[in-house]
Image 1 (cartoon, one colour):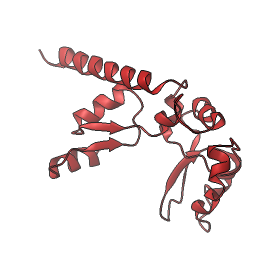
Image 2 (cartoon, one colour):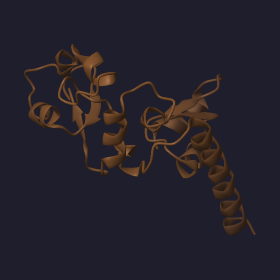
Image 3 (tube, rainbow, N blue to C red):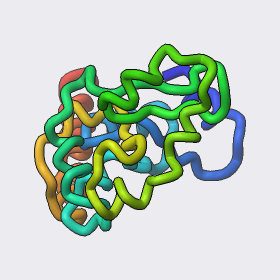
Image 4 (cartoon, one colour):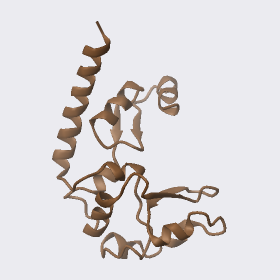
Length: 158
């Protein structure tokens, strides 16, 4: 909420907002704050076309809004992951770089072993209710965004 309008007011290139975007309401918010587009990470992982294993996709759908963990808070890069036994053990561990737990990521990404590595996922996982085709996600997001913007205009502009 702070950085997006700040960046949009200071640069002369299109701003693409990322982080926390999952639907038309969040897209409308980004546009209102100065973005020209959004990037959806976690939402696109949980799509039919995503090459990621179904176990990971389903873990996103099953997640609540509190089922992610921020790791490497005091190191780089910090990363948000789905809550698992592995991520819980690392949540307050400042002596280990969480990236060390990504060595077996292909076993997670393509084999579906949720214990093999950390499953990246944003806090928006708690708002994703189904695995849908990308075309439907984009169409629904765009339509909802337009509806939200129309409603805001008719509600607040008299």
